[in-house]
Image 1 (cartoon, rainbow, N blue to C red):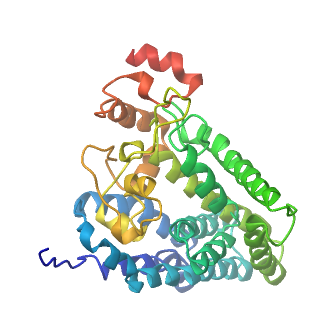
Image 2 (cartoon, rainbow, N blue to C red):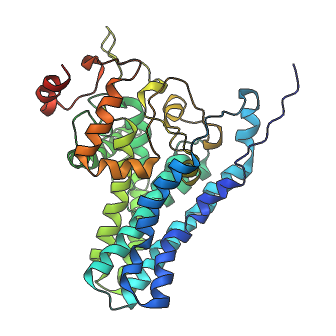
Length: 380
């Protein structure tokens, strides 16, 4: 066997995931220096406008690490420490934002802006929990629950690992968006659907062990308890203004997960076999993106095709594949596109139907049943 030499060219660029904390804190800092409330919205412009533009300018990286060195790459503790280091950042952003709201006489729209900025960043905490929650170590499992405490979304890991990964890209999955379904219709199905499925799965697990649902063995309640302590303390310290602030913060963090789920599997469908079971999840059942900047920000989440094919593979080892669904921009650009449904449909429906494994065959598409007649009328 020949000698293989490999150096991760992005090794130190992954530090950007930690430096991302500076974006939400930027608005707070500029406001404290100037007193101008509109500056609290600067992070929104950076994330939803400047980052998509930079994705287009910087471009993509489709290179893969050699499979022979993946075991060493995954064993490199440096990459694991980066995910650990992002966890306190989510707490810092929430507490700093709560402090600003609780100690300054802000207008209502400024409070909304601070909540959106902090919630948008703490939507990343769900992404950090996503990376940690798929791993088999007790430390990473515990830290995933800690991440989920910040936006009060404690059922995520249970639902995602035991529910979404089982039924992804099927009509039964509330976290897989359908062709013709707007992100707003999807949110009304996805948010409660994931919540109910997560609780049903945890209830079934505890029943098999002969344990009650309401107990310290309930993994969902463990994270919710941490949320109650954290957010309850903020209400106690800063007063009742925290109630609307935290409600908006939590919702916008949840909606970032909804946005990710929406763009990741739009219209993609696993075929059902003769025995009634769905085919195994393949790379072409997820929308992929190789944009360098946002993948550095999101621990390679955009290489979603490999993640669903190999869920326990660590972010630094995720691969690109040929002939898979490719998004035309990184996640934040795709979120903006999704928030304008007419524009989303005009771009993504044609892209969906042109995929090599679909080639215009609507029977191979996960379709919104309420839009089926309109879709067949248009695309036949």
